[in-house]
Length: 509
Image 1 (cartoon, helix red, strand yellow):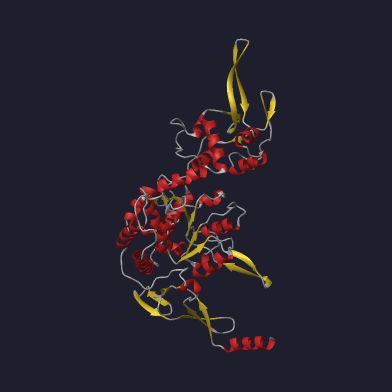
Image 2: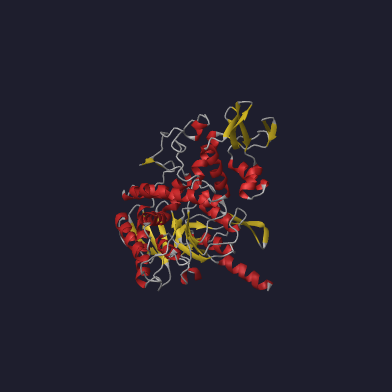
């Protein structure tokens, strides 16, 4: 056994070349992507940025060597995931334009899926899927590629009851995405992060309803890291001193029946609610649908390679009437592509606000959202009082009482005990939630005296709670409360708005 191992080491040392399977290679001179015609072994399609020409290569060498002095040779990946269709790569390239391909995408999506009146939202999601072909342009300089910074890829959860078309829409988006990797629901996270580290593409996860999707869930941790490009680290099982790190960034598309329990994951999502169709569309995907989808893959590969070194994602761009920063981050690749296809601007401005509303509606149902909406009702009804300048607290009730023919305002502060009785949650959970919402400054006293009695009040500050209202209250307008004044005006708090004309910023109208 030992002699066999020694012979293997000696044999490897004598070999002049060291082969590495890699589906994508990008240098300053060219971009090479793996293609496979499903008949012959896969190969590279290479596009030279200078000569603007395409060619095919079985393997590619960049003139590099490893620690043993062996020549590093890159070859296309040819494993069971590719052979059995879990991952899809184009079979070649087809010349097209962004305008032509988007028109074809709209026809393809309408023939394969009934949006039930939500055509504009489906159109936006298909564009987000196309944007996945350019997500690597978030980092143009590899020297400043820092884990978890400077990039963002959204999660698209397609939700709805059984037979509502969730899988069909996922199928459409899958064939429009960059190197889509398909997996059924799994608790074994290594079966996700190991292949995605290799393929560096889009994850499509079917039946992603798990018993636990809160912040302690390993799946939620993986998805949150994936959205921000944070690699996953694991100690090597055979060598405790070695840390294995897996690249983890890309678009995620999944089907599920209910929202995530974790608010952070929900905020990284672009939710879509699928409805049961009355149209008699094919009950399973037809061969024609598959052919059209695979043909679109070839056209999207052509656009990726042709424009890769030209696309610049302006991270300072923002979109008028949107306050959700992560939604704007999700659309940054599309804003960049709008320089080549102006109709994208119309798609974004026409539908992004509807997506923002859907996100707020979902977050309003969370624990954070239900508390904030109740507090918003208190503010709207004027049920708050001032303790110190800009330091206010909520009231449970305020009523006028006659005493010796004199009217006297009698107030009862809102406490965590009142919220405990209202929501049937423990006071400990409520206090932790209120603390995490950051609606008041730290270091305020636990109890204050109101009407001569000590109460554990719930403090807030106008400018701080305003941010939470925008995040969790549907149809909340920052400039008014029930058609009156803004919360900062009602509470007489001055808010200094940031200068939106900062140098280098772009505004999408």
